[in-house]
Amino acid sequence: METMISGGAVEKSNADREKALRADYASLGAQLDRRGIAIDAILAKVEAFGVAIPSWGVGTGGTRFARFPGQGEPRDVFDKVEDCAVINQLTRATPTVSLHIPWDKADASRLKQAAARFGLGFDAMNSNTFSDASGQRQSYKFGSLSHADPAVRRQAVEHNIECIEIGKTLGSKALTVWIGDGSNFPGQVNFARAFERYLDAMKDIYAALPGDWRLFTEHKMYEPAFYSTVVQDWGTNYIISKELGDKAYCLVDLGHHAPNVNIEMIVSRLIQFGKLGGFHFNDSKYGDDDLDAGSIDPYRLFLVFNELVDAELSGAKDFHPAHMLDQSHNVTDPIESLMLSAVEVQRAYAAALLVDRKALEGFQEDNDALMATQTLKAAYRTDVEPILAMARLNRGGAIDPVAAYRASGYRQKVAAERPASVGGGGGIV
Ligand code: LRH
Ligand code: MN
Ligand code: MN
Image (cartoon, rainbow, N blue to C red):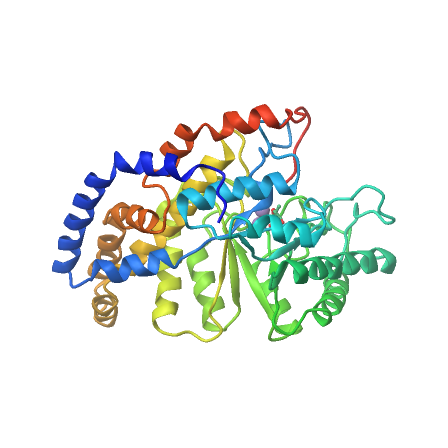
């Protein structure tokens, strides 16, 4: 398997840290043993856990106001794959990439080969009918799959079918559809008619889905539409998945809800009714901020994973959610941010595995609110870092991914090879 950073550099970085890690792991193992938890069983689960990197995350994002390019930004999807390979080499937690079309349009067989060099696969394909690609016949200014004009809807459907075709060559097994359709003014669109047109168009996309694929629809409360959005919340999303059929599931992007919404409860509902398709993990304070996972509210991320682990252990039906990141980086090196986000997601998973579920159930039955919540806190407060670091070490990754990355000089190397990209005006999403 090829790597972007030399194996020797990673070994050197680990050599300085391995002794301390083994001591910390043994100490945590003893602590967990007293709580009746076998640390090696948790380690095995963490080692098997993966989260996909969004191809659009490895470049510097921007805001509506400006974009400040970083050094050595990827020039095309092949550079993006190389950056994703670095992230997986050091974290061993990100074995797949999620592509966005047409941003990542390229010869699909070549792309598959480029990823295979590093052992990378492809998670869900993402379509884009929220911006106009150069040369396209119809504009999405007033919507796409819900547009009043059938010619626009047809173009949007065909684009989604094209994404499926590309994904088939790449070995992807899912399509994620997020649309920006909505309105900026009361009265601008008829809610019911727009939703009906959307459902009709989605049925055409669903009909083109291979038998072993899943269709994820992603809801978002607002933005770019500021008065109403066609797929605005999980209720609408659930209706969509029911209308479309068994291969249709809901995708939850953590940043796409109203402030204070109880996202973990939405997750529970979707699990209960077999419609949770996957996640776009990120964090936010105000809106769809696309900040690094766990950077603002790590307890919420833990509570989401508490639901996921509960479902995993109880063998919930139709439960195999896709884990993906979706973030945008303005002030950090995207590779560093994505590595840390992947680790944060893993951390939430590992901590959720430590919840004493039998005790929790007992406290719930007894209406002992205080002890129930303390049971969650006891798991959350446990520092699982030695488990995460050991999982990386065992699988050839870096005990300290950011330290190894910085020591490797990768960013400086690609900065010399990749010309600086253009800054200036507003970014997207
Ligand atoms: C929309 C969104 C969606 C897009 C991505 C670029 O805000 O979360 O997932 O595909 O951002
Ligand atoms: Mn998203
Ligand atoms: Mn978003």
